[in-house]
Length: 228
Image 1 (cartoon, rainbow, N blue to C red):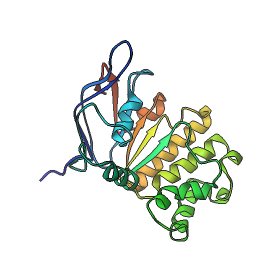
Image 2 (cartoon, rainbow, N blue to C red; image 1 turned 180 degrees about the horizontal axis):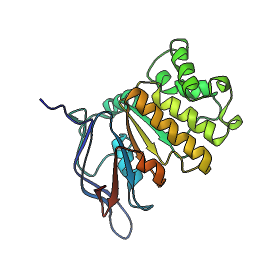
Image 3 (cartoon, one colour; image 1 turned 90 degrees about the horizontal axis):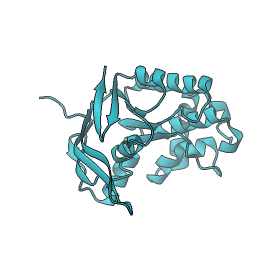
Image 4 (cartoon, rainbow, N blue to C red; image 1 turned 180 degrees about the vertical axis):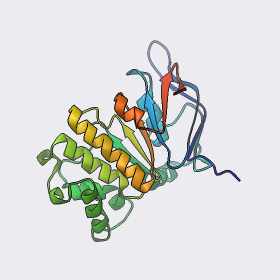
C-alpha cells in the first residue's frame, strides 16, 4: 500500500477582501510533497508564494479546499489542534530571521520546546548540539543583536529543528543576506536534508538554491506549474 504524501493540498483557494473587490490569490491549486523531498517554489513577487507557504505552515487558512498533512485532513482542526501540530511537526525559517532580541541564541533555539512545555535543562543539550551543527556552538550565549545576519539565520535554522519536525518551510531564507552568506545558508540547508532526510520546502528567488532542490514548481495565475 502506498503511503500518503506528507502534504496534499486539494483544490485550494485563498481570497482576501479588498475595498475594490476580493483578491483571489490561489485558484484551485493542487500540490503534493513526499516525505524527505526537497521542493523549491518560485515565481515573481506578489503572486502568493508566501501565502501558500503560510497555509502549509498552518499560519493561515485557505478560503476553500483541503490541506492534508500525513494523510490527515486538518482543514477542520481546532485552533488548539493546529497549534500543537504546527509546533511539533513543522519548522520555520523566515527571511528576516524572527528571533527574539532579548533572548540568547540558545534560548531562541529552545523556544518551540519551551512553548510545548519542555524544561530548559532537558532541552539544552539538543539545542547546543544543533548550534554546533550550524557552526555556532561557541556563540550560544550571544543575543541576536550581537550576531551577523548569516549567524542569525543559522540560529533560526537550528530553532526550526529543535522539535525534530517532519518538514522545514523556508521563506526566502537567503533573501536578506549577501551572496556569499546566502551560498553558505543554501549549503547548510542541503546538508541538513541530506543528513536527516527532513522534508524541505523553500520559497526562493535564488536560482542556485531552487536548482539544488529535487523539484521546482512555479506559482502562476494561482496554480502551481512543475518546472523541468
